[in-house]
Amino acid sequence: MTSEVEKFVIEALANMNYDVSEVTGDTPLGPAGLDLESLSVAEIAIQVEDTYGVKFEEDEMESVALFTVAGLVKEIVNRASAAAATR
Image (cartoon, helix red, strand yellow):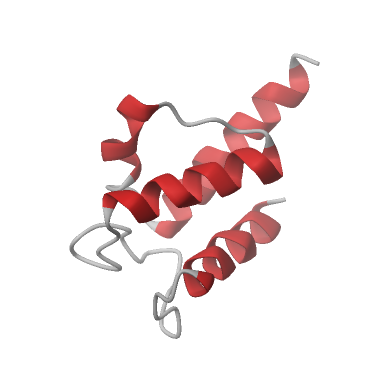
């Protein structure tokens, strides 16, 4: 599931017109990397919720922006697995 989620995140970034040509798992989402704006972080969170049923609360958005791509992917996979386990 991890590679699927990573592909999803990178495609979502590309669809928001971010240059993903050199994006790796170690690429920060924040200022030291992709420099996502808060609106972009919220957009990814909405797409993740729609696709994987994983919800990031509004007060988590600032910390999400500090993740690397791999960190975000890991968080999505962990939350999706936890949600699936409670069903």
